[in-house]
Image (cartoon, one colour):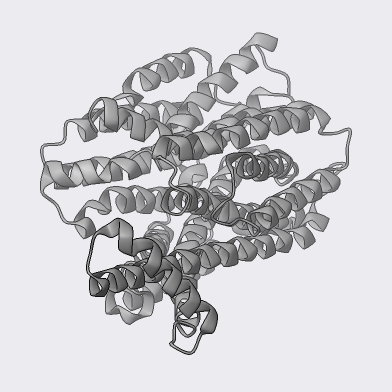
Length: 516
């Protein structure tokens, strides 16, 4: 339906929700680079300080699936304003935290408020635009979602280096105030939104909190605790499986479920959720891998690593806007298939990196990544919800963002684990060739000794020890290089796995989901 206040109104609403989305998504990654500084401030151990990140992700995961119910119960505008206010105040409290316990509490509050704010932003943006312009609305929402992870480490690093770490939270305050004013002035609740019938289904709330909370703990802490070698991780995995299973059962059998899962009867919605999960898995894994590669093996500074990702972000925005304009004119399946292929091609290019790879090659590969993301995100976000009844758009948006978040968490966990395991594998294989019977190695070893002897000013025994250390360090570098190549190859497969689900997407001519 057309906006009741004319053309300008929908663009103001889009800007308003984009500010809230960008602020929340930015905070998922902005604190990462400041952890060493926080660790010093609170005299905390590494295991303790990582709860600053983990607590935020757990709170996010718990609130996302029930956001639609909360929006119907309290009104989308009221809930969005409440989330903006709480998130902004929690940012103030996080920056002023007198202890690590207080900081973690503020991060939990930030995660709960921000987690509900993002799906509400998506639902409000879609409602502000007529249906034929939902592609453009999804593009505007996507700009906030995509730029947050890209700018988070860069902004966090710059602020921490030039100011102090509390400012990574305090920069949210002016943004939050502006977003609150705009939302209060311009956002409106739709007429069809009704309060949920019946009593609150507290069992669903308990099941989803236990299931998704434990799942996020398992994914974010598992690699550090060696997964199933840890009894705590075994308990988390078991509770996650039990909680999610019971939540699904309760949602399908309760008279008034907290989350109506019957949306998954629509092939395009179910397929769209699978696509966004797989794409987010690859996206967040690549966001972790590429900066690690260029900093640890190529010697890039954190700032240059952040700048390396910037052209891909620009490419994403360009692609999103172009796709937003093309929606309705080009078959959505062709657009998404092209996007998945571009993502796979980007990862394939990164399987050819070496220790002499230059910035232009890496930027080119990342531009294909950005273009692919733009071609996937907008049409999936639009096509997946086209036949969802308006009253359930908030719930559908919550599920969309839950799949995005959980896909990212799985991607980071898998990438970190595979990187460590493949590095150990390649190191062992390469070390097998470091023997006195390897003629080529012995020649190189002798040449290295001859080159070091006149320069180092050491006795022959010390020179031999030094050359052995250099060879060992090179074996370690090469093993890590090979492990990065392996994981990028794994991401090629992940992106290609999204292609079959593209067939479920279509431009329906009507016939929404029946709730009866």
